[in-house]
Image (cartoon, rainbow, N blue to C red; front, top):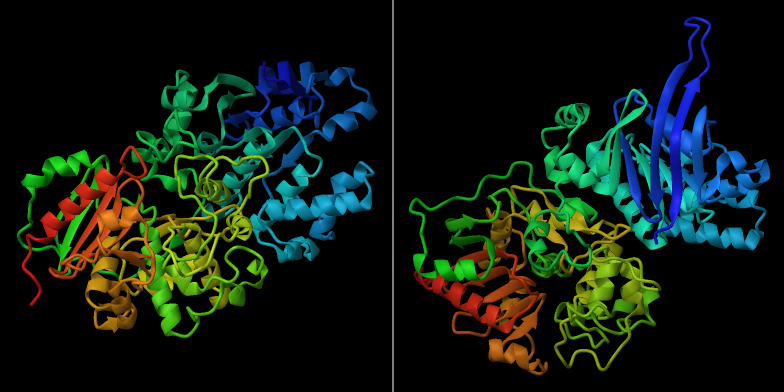
Length: 637
């Protein structure tokens, strides 16, 4: 049976009569509800509805006029003052104004330590706990020496969350935890709170006027008006099918766009969102459940040209359908020849690229190498000394680019114990597991060596995330800003892309980019155009030639690669077919493709939501589809 952590029965709060009116004011009237361990309960209502007063009563901050409040099975009216202080150590508080909630005279270390010092814990234990918490909320040890005026609003709220977690509370009050923060920071804080809830089995009572926040966070919710709860129930059911007239009015007046975030699938599961049928929705809405950062588009970009006569491919329509296509776009010599959008997508819709993201990193490294910022012959430890003892320490940058680093890494997407599953957990793509790495770079440091680097092709997604780390280290610029500055804006991309990040803001470069089909096609067309966009060399031609040439013949490749592409290889984060048409391509699980045919100067982008991550039959059918389309165009003279 689930443990009840909070119970309110008939709680009423009446403020004393004022001299002016001579009458008392009933702020809360006969309210009853309970919370079970691990639950998130949301309270919404307009200003003055009694939300905050009710929360203060529920947490023992304000005395009640009548009724009963029980916390962790103890009635507040039966608890002594001493026991009440102990009971309140099981409670945490995160308030609306993150800056105002922090003492301006104290350093961050002192602010987080304060609740622990009240419990008279040993200094060494307090220091260890503070050190752990500051990193767990996504800040660094250097932040401990700062005061609140040296922090941003989002950083202040992270400190407030760390303070709330100091005593290992069971129940936390979140009173408008994001309302004073910028939109981009709001999402980061909400996702951090959700990660912490899952990791520590926390119970939240969250107050907000923002229905998007309540929808994103809460399992159940209640609507308050004039001190009373007028409707209560499961969050998604209540928001989708309200019965009370005030609730309907509140929802309608909040936002016409509210339904987008309110209607998260009822069966959503962070461990299963990549599998069918949930992936069709999830691949188009990643930013709703994983933190993301923006890869900015060009401010003056122009739309991609269309040919005057749009082609059609009725002979492969069944194949397009069979391969669970969400979008397909065909570009020939810089002009769109065909595009089709299915399952709610449009030309403006972003879609998760999965491992096609790796090929975009390849384009970034073409520039970093050409500019001398990265030497592909140097070892990982030359750039990241902290990884000297890891399996990657003596691998070269080129080993990472070509997937020839020899490490213990299973890419079995359906094995929850595989290294790729562990990496997903560290990136926030799956639910955390006890003892597992909680951020990407912690995981990368744990990978062990398995043999001699440079001799065998071994597909390992972690390589790409390590390359992103090196790129940030040598440039001092965030990965999303690098992609924007070096690739996205020079391409004249029309739409912002996004990339998922972990709890510390590290990017999942191996698969976390979402973008539109048209902007991805621009990237492919630039490569086919020898790296030139509008007369500007965006991607070095030397790197493009080396990529098309493929890997060294001395590299031993696995049977599955040779069966699909005899003589094929992997180079610079691209798959090389070694066919008569000399195609190269980027591919992501569940059917994401960027296919480049240099013979006809054809780019094919395909977004999909296949039911399984990888399948040899699906791969063969995709090759057939792409080659049929490419061969419909004349060969380049």
